[in-house]
Length: 408
Image (cartoon, rainbow, N blue to C red; front, side, top):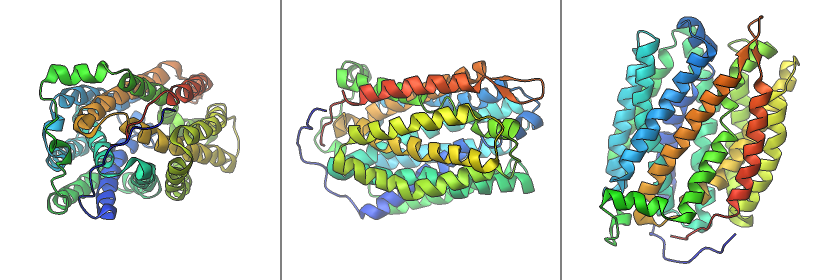
C-alpha cells in the first residue's frame, strides 16, 4: 500500500455527529427503499404473476437508471455546494418512491423503480463525497462505519417493519412510509446542513464536462478504484437478491420468518460496523478489507450451498454473511473515497456510483440467468452464483492493495 500524500483537510464545517446522523438517515431511507424489494420478492412474483427473471429486472431497473444518471451528473456535480445537490437529489428520490407506491401494474412499477434509482444512485455518491470532504483520512473509516450502520438499522428496523406493513396492509405501505420519512428529512437537510462548499474554495473545480471525464478515466489510480468497485459488486451482490427467496422456497422460511434474516444480521452489524471502521483506521484499510473478505468466502459458500436444514442453522449462515460482507465494505468505501482530491471527488464518486450500479445490475441479471426453478417451485443452481462471488471476492483483495490513497 503506498503511503498517502499529506495535505490539509477541510476543517469541520459543523457538529460532526449531527452531520453523520443526517447522512446516516439519508442512507437509511434510500437503502431501505432498495432493500425492501428483496424480502418481498416472492410476493411480487405472486401479485404481478412474474418469473424470477422478471423479478430480477425490478432490481436491475433501479441500478440501470442509477448508472445513466450517475454518468450524467458527474459532468457538473462538483460545480455546486454539496448541500444543494443533496437536497435536490433527495426530493427527486422522494417523488420516485411515491410513484412506486401508487404503481397499478408490473410495468408501471418497473418505470417507477427506474425513477427512484436515477436519484438514489446520486444520493449514495453525495453522501460518500461529503464524508470524504469533511472527515480526515485518519478518522474516515470510523465515520464511514457510523454512516454505514444505516444499512444495519434498515435491516433491523426498516425491513421487518416494511414486511409487517406489507403483510398487514399492502405491498404499497412500505413505499409510502419511506416517502413520508424522506419528505420530513428534506426539511432537516434544508435547515440543519451548512452549504458544504469547501471543495469550491480553491477554484480548482473542472467545468469542462469532457475534461472531467477524461481526468477520471485517464488516471490509473481512479481506474483501479472503479475496477475494484465492479469486482466487489460481483463478489457481493450476485447472491443477495435471491437470499430471501432461496430461504423461503428451499429452506422453508415463512413470509414472517424472513424478517429474522434481516433482524439478526442487522443487530450484529449495528454494533460491529463501527468496530470495523476503528480497526481499519488503526491497522490499515487494505489489511482489514483482506481479512474480512477471506472470512466472507465461507459465508458465501454456506449460503449458496445450503441444503434443507433447520431455520436456526440457516440464520447462522445468513448472519455471518451480513457481518463480514458489510464489514469489508467499510474499509473498501473508505479507500475508494480517498483516491481523489475534494475538487474532483463529487464527479469521481458519481462515476463510481454509476459503475457500481452497472455492476449491481449485471450481478442481478447474471444471477437471474443462472438460477432456475425446480419442478416443486424451489430454486436451482444457486451454488454456481456463489462460486462466481467467491472468485470475484479474491480478485477484489488483490486490487485493494494497489489503490493509492490521497489524504485530503
